[in-house]
Amino acid sequence: MPTWLALIGAYFIGSLDFAVVVARAHGVDIHSVGSGNPGASNVLRTLGRGPAAMVFLGDALKGVIAAAIGWLAGGAGDPANQPIAFAAGFLAVAGHCFPIFHRFKGGKGVATAAGVIVFTVPVVGFILAALWTLVAKVFKVASIASLVAVVATVPLAFWQGTRGAALAWLGGMLALIVVRHAPNIRRMISGSEQKVPT
Image 1: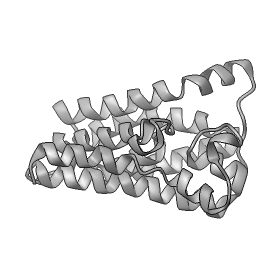
Image 2: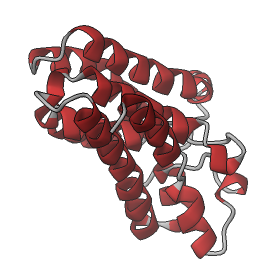
Image 3: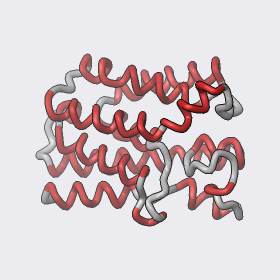
Image 4: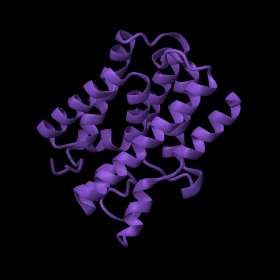
């Protein structure tokens, strides 16, 4: 597969928003309830654990598929240090954040990034999942857990052998997630950030 096709495909894969699909199946416009964010955390708050799990798994699978396509297009090799796999992952997260199918109004990209990381550096993915769960249980705020996981990702990936362009693409993906969390950060500072059931 040509690299350019893998990267474009990754963006379109990322643009499939499972929060919108699952919420519509329950007769809900996810943009008009809770925080308005089309992501698993808002689905959890508004529709419950089952629908939220479906959204998280669907969004994470987007990251896995995109990274796998990029990995193959880049000639396979060690996925922890395969730049095209991470580039495709970045574009899948960008697609989730700015989906062409939903008027570019997307989510934060956390679950999709998790899928990318589980494919490329699985040990890091499972460590981050445990860390996210622990922080979410303590603070009951999904955005705090997500930002803590973001901070931990680069050093953990470096420990697992991610270097050079692959690490740069990973850093760009994480930076995009932080930017998308800007409203959450402002709400955390003001003490008005919504909590999730854990």
